[in-house]
Image 1 (cartoon, rainbow, N blue to C red):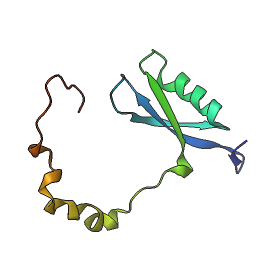
Image 2: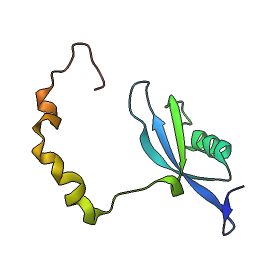
Image 3: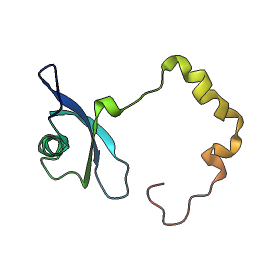
Image 4: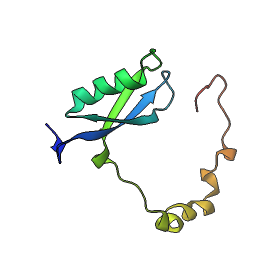
Length: 97
């Protein structure tokens, strides 16, 4: 059981509303293990059947960039025009690109 300081572990919940769409962060749950985290996420965030998939990730497993590193991480891509979506044609019939 993953209990720290007599508290259950915190898990981040991501829900996919329809097949083919991205998973969106829905919130957090407390649970002792992954099975309990999935159960709690289902009970809290999909009570009305509004999801097709649930991901749960221990909060401790998530890394984030430091806002002070924004120049180093994000500015270099500005000089690579081929990365901008204006150069791509949307395929006919594509819905979620």
